[in-house]
Image (tube, rainbow, N blue to C red):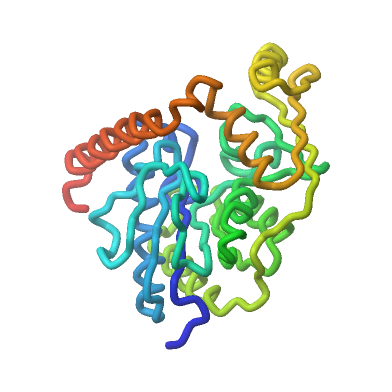
Length: 304
């Protein structure tokens, strides 16, 4: 089989994966987190195997949930490159995305303020993120960070609200939804994964998608869930304007906006200066978490 994209990047999150049913399951080292990690791993595995069978030559999988250590390597085809943890650059969090020409986003969620399943953008501490008057998602931020490398977003999977938002903003992208309203008892994860993998393969011939280059300038309004005091403190930290619980950011381009949002959500001026060492410590915490997940699965799911 001949496909348009021979080299692909998969970005995977946990909220839109097959076995994540609530916030607790998406949270680090809770009792139910290992099951969500298992679902995320099986979903990605189904997509990876289907892509290789379709003729894709190289696949890089980037685990992009919380610590970046949620996908269990033993479930992923060893031909694929699995990237755990976070890199400083050249693409924030991802590192070097080459040789990929397309990105597929699996297990994603809707943006802050959308009302989707476990909706958030970058962090759940943001209640609503509006950019130039519209909600902005992680899918848009990730796609824009890959655009300078001529990487095209071709596929997206998440709850219906997340899929609707992706279709609105990422030209020509193909979506495969997961209905989080279906009860655990009535949800057939194996059948859903089969459909997910089939849809992912079909997206490789997508000739409607383009790299995501939104035009600036950008005016962002970031409303903090914890209210005015938190917004005021963060705004003062980064010399930004705030009114009540909302912080305002002005940026000339999408990359500057992404950088300012990451500073606001994750860093202080001090930790930004020691970011290289901080990332290593953060990744070490993630490695421990993944080891713990494996021990829990061995204990609770010996047949898996």
